[in-house]
Image 1 (cartoon, helix red, strand yellow):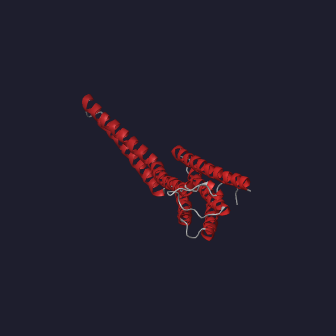
Image 2 (image 1 turned 90 degrees about the horizontal axis):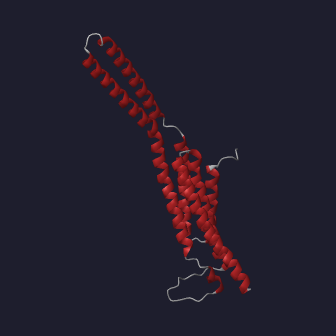
Length: 234
């Protein structure tokens, strides 16, 4: 076992345990359903990242076939021009040469298209998967958004205040679960950056890691405030 790369199975296992903890502590909370979705997505992410890391053999075989066919066509065209150059005049020869050059340009464009096609396909799939992770991070943030730390000291309520019946310990655990889940979403995103060295993918992964870190930092600020309020109350 190597400790220099992320192990997808360990991330999935950690999320499964986190989901079990949330389910035991808050069985009727929406966070439990979100945790189940994140755990299921983690299994899918592990499979997707491994699949995208593998080469597209069918595409590479197609590229090889195209290169062979193109080279054969160029060799044939060169021989044809060499044989016919003695039988035609200069204008006709130049016209044939121009056609051969145009064929070479089209061939080069086709090869370049196929050379970058695999990268573009993988990039599109990875970006779509990363967008899904980014959306889940915002969903988790919405679940902790209304968890006011002042509730643990019985702050003044208004008619529009949401009903909250969590104790100080329960509220702290709830926020801690949100922070853990956000951190693990960042690790799921990192799986794509680790297996695909595409700079666009790496940048998108960095954005998600920064997002989850910033959201997690806000949650830990709330947890710190809860501890301070409890100390003052005591």
